[in-house]
Structure formats: structure tokens, C-alpha cells
Length: 288
Length: 295
Image (cartoon, rainbow over all chains, first blue to last red):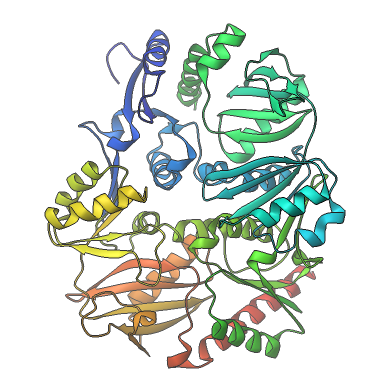
């Protein structure tokens, strides 16, 4: 243990992360030593039975915990990395296999659905073959999303059978998944989930522009809604996430939180909430 | 009993035909559903897997041949089947891991299965640093390449650098491995439950990558007990009752190089022997499960 600190956390981030200083201050305030590293500086080397994380001169064994804040485009690196944290008993807010689910929206929905968590009615296709023969089953308007790998290629609101047929006809490029989802003309709740705490912002739907207002307002979800959000994160395997929901139906779960966005609207210091959460992990571990 | 066969995007017509022919010999009902034509419904809290209106979770057994291109949709389909009463010899997580060559080696190495020194990096500089730890020549692999494709060799840092430039353009992570001299062959262990078929695959002249789809040859061989046990161990860890575990032999020792989720059955060399063995295994296992569930 480092002198004066209760625990040591490794913060793994993408290039140009804007929160390093704020997070460091918040963690240090809670007596947690904090070291940040860009994911591109990491490497995994497997030799015999052993795997080592190669970094800029420090060893993974120095750390009690890791806070991972990278996008799903890093899934192929992150999954073996989380596996290594799990093998070495280092706490990380995302569990093995979670990025595989987080990186695939359709997989998120089927996972949540199988855990009896409310999601909008959705039909998922691997190609556009049978969409036309399913037309009678759909209730419009629908959200149509197309994914290729981890990338969302299209996200449109389809208001009738006719426009769906014509849109599907116009798809020229290859895709992995096509998703048709029930649309609610209602406000969008965007929530930061940090362990068992939920911080929410409501964004109104602007019909004329067919989009949600970027700027949101403070929103307090009901206890049940909050529990559902936490349950959703657990089902996917993460304890920290941004969860979007409409009318109690979970639309998406993302593995990172835009701390400054929430702080600006809610006036709460989420960096400190995160540090408190990490400290609670240390205290729980200490009691075991 | 009802059997479902789901074919992925790179499926060869002849393999599909052989599997279906053999399936008809064992099962009462056989349905073929191409993965691309399957639909998933998540409606009112219920998940349904459908093909032309047929509920695919109503079958007794299912075998799926998915390839790397099928990952995003295929992992969901497998996950739904894994959570149903259908016997599927393939696990969704095993599909994800075997689609990632470095992850496969990492997971299996910790269970004492011998593997080549392997690395994974995000940036070219880290990959170069690690290549010195591995030692040249090194083998560079695309994480989800198959059939020997996406495998390159670099004899020095100078040769490695242009490969890194290409990988960067395609936003690929960099997976490297120690080069193990293969003596122009590898050993494929085709696992079907507790049975393991040993197949020696010889490279065509002038080729260092062993793969019969690239023009090599294949023949059955007797496996050492150690290799057979390691192949079975790999299949158990990955949750894949049916898979191919590939080893390279060098200086009297062997190392696992990769696990194939959807192995080819090499009909040019073995006719319908392997699809027949597959169906025999699936039928026997399904019958066992069904009779157990009766009590």
C-alpha cells in the first residue's frame, strides 16, 4: 500500500480525456491514489501460464482497482484486459463479457429482455430479407437502426409501411444488424448510474425537429425506475454506466458517463460520487 | 426428435448438403435456417427466435456453423438458444472468444495448455516493444481471420513496420505470436463430445501456413494422449462440444495455435465421415438429455 493512501486506482482512458484532473482530485480527496494511462500505451503479453500487462513502467499488481473509461470500439482489447483484472482480483467496474454486450445494441436488448427488464418492443434482423413479410406485425412510427460492427450506420424514424419499404430498398451497404424499435413520442431520461445511485436528466422531444433537446433538466426517477436501471446495469455486467430510458423502458446502456454534462445540469459533483463508490469497494473488500 | 441446422455467411454448399443428409439419417425432422434469414422478436418481455414463422427454440437440438462475419448477430442467436431447452453443443461466449485469436490463447494458457508467446496491443509502438520480448521472426494475426487468411510473418522490425501501417489504416488491434517452425504440417484435433479425430494437415509447397482450403492435404493420424487431453480441455473451457483445436509440433513439443468454431469437414479427403460422426454425437447427446429430463 502506498503511504498515506487507502487504495490505488488505475484510470484507463482514451486519448484527450477531459476529466483526468477532476477525477484525480476527487479520488485523492478520498485517500485513493490515482494514476491515469491512455489505453494505447497498454499491451498484453502471454507467456506460458502467465499474462502481463505492459505499461509505461508500472505493474498491474500495484493497483487494487481500475476505472475503465473507453468506448466500445476498444472491445477487442478490453475483453482480454478485463479478464486479466478478474484473474488478478483487481476490481473493475465492468465485468468480463460486459463489453461484448455493451458493444452490440441488439445483444443489450435481448439480454435485458431475458432479465425481465422493460425495453421497447423490438424486432432484430440479420439482413433485410424478411422485413417486407413482417410488415403487418409493425406498429408505426418505428425507430430503424442499422449497425455494422460496433458502428451505428443509420438511425431514422420511420412513420409508415411505405417509408419503411422504400428505406429498406435504399440500403446499399453491408450491415450486421437491422433493428426496428417501437417509438415513444415522450421525453428521454438520461441517467448516470454509479453503483446504487442514479442521477437523471430529462431531455424533451421536439416534434418539429424530430430530435431530443440537447440540454436537459433535473429529473428524479421513481424508486422503481431507479432500481430497474441498476438492475439493467447488473444484467449487462457494469456498475457504472449511462442509461437512456423512455417512460420506464430502457433504450440503451453505454459504458461511460459524461461527468461534466450531468454536473452542469444537476449541480452535483459526480467525480466525488465515483470516488466514494470506489472507496466503498475497498471497504467492502476489507470486510470480507 | 427435431433438429435445426443454422448456416452462417461463409458456409460451403457441399458441407451444408452433407450435414443435412446425415441429419436426416438420425432425426425425424430437420430444418435448415440460414442465419441471415432469422428474425428475433423482443415483444412484451418475451424473446422469440423465428425463421419463416417457426419458433426455433422448439427444436430438440441445433448445430450452427458461424464465421467471424456472423459475430454480431450470431452471438445473440446462440445466446438465446443457450438459454432455451434446445441442446446446442456451442456456447455463445466460446464463439466470441474463438473469434479473437489472442483471447483464445490467453484463456487456454492459464489452464496449462502450451501456447506460443502471444501479445495484443492497441498502438504500433507498444506492439514493436512487445515484439522484442517475443523475439523475431514473429507471426502477425488478424484477430478474427480464418482459414489461414490474415496471417503474416515478419523477420525483423523493418518488416514488421509496414504491416503495422496497414493494420492502423484498417483500425485493427495488433496481435502477434512467436513463430513456431511447423515442419510443413499442423495437427487438427476435431472434437465431438468426448471423441477426438486427429488430422494431419500438410502445407502446399512454398506455403508456411497450414490450411487445406489453401491447397494443403489432410489425413487421419493417431494422437498422443497428452494432445488429445489438451484438445478436450480446450473444448470444455470454451464450452464448445464441437470445435477444432489446432496444434503445431516442433522439436518434440506441441503448442496450441488456435481453436476453430466452425471447422471444415474436408470432404475431399474424408467424404461424409466427419458430418456422420457429428450427427451421431448430436443425436446421442440429445437423446441422453431428453431421457434425463423425463424423470
